[in-house]
Image (tube, rainbow, N blue to C red; front, side):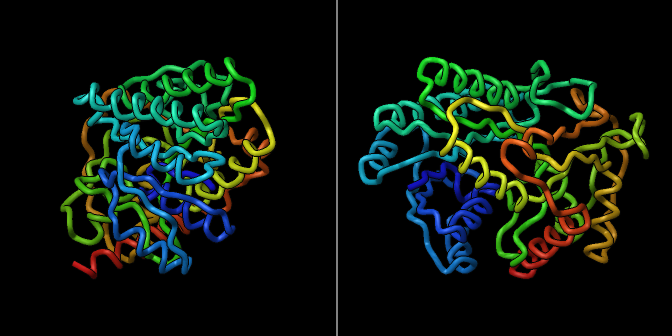
Amino acid sequence: MILVTGGLGYIGSHTVVEMVEKNEELIILDNLSNSKLQVLDKIHSITEKRPAFYQGDIRDPDILEKIFSNHAVEAVIHFAGLKAVGESVNKPIYYYDNNITGTLEVLKVMKKYGCKKMVFSSSATVYGNNPQVPFREDYDLSTTNPYGASKRMIEDILRDVYTADPEWSITLLRYFNPIGAHKSGLIGEDPNDIPNNLLPYVSKVATGELDCLCVFGDDYKTLDGTGVRDYIHVVDLARGHLKALDYVRNNAGAEAINLGTGNGYSVLQVVKAYEKASERSVNYKITSRRPGDIASCYACVEKANRLLDWHAKYDLNQMCEDAWRFAYNENEKK
């Protein structure tokens, strides 16, 4: 039995679908702070199965105790955490408490019940403002905001857990920029408030829910002056978690592994691909750079290829087509 924390969120829900389709038995724990209960029905519609669900917070030891006492949990895929960079700058205590304290509570109950396998949702933000691309797992780490700092601290905690007890097996999956949606159009990125990430913002401009996309800077040393990032299809990312789960089942250690495509796309390339997919124009305006943003950020994925036998297979056009299908379906319901 696998516990998936934050399993109704964007990446979590897509991973749950892939897991169910691989006949994995799982439990979802989610506090619905940035997700919706209806996603559980959508997972059922896609897979014809309904995973066990607990509504609760990872900082609550009682709900964790209830789950681990009622189920034989073999491993934890740990998504639950706050993830908005800008919000983290304004609410650092909130982020450190939720992300770090929550992870410590999960680790305490795992240790108590002898569950020593974890796939952790980390982030490429742990590379900070490193100017060298592609980013490799052995680079020195630095962070520019409390969100990234919380991920880096949790990575340190998890490595210390393994050092103290080498029976633990942990993968630290450093995501780059997940976009796209499930091919069914039923689940995708659907934040509860104004989007912080590029694609859901572009989607809302395309559907008319928002007036204009702000592009932060067009004077970077890139092909068109806008920032370049490694956008990865969320289904590719989800499949990476299944590969990581197989890895922790068979290998002890604490391994940091990038999950990206190894290719960079500029903001304007993404906008143009989305316009093609949606057959709608996306109104945008160029504004000043955001503090802390860098020109280019993309992954070296050799380690994921080698250790996990994992390769991203979807290109930018497919990512945008799937994202638009979901956005269109959601907009039609309103």
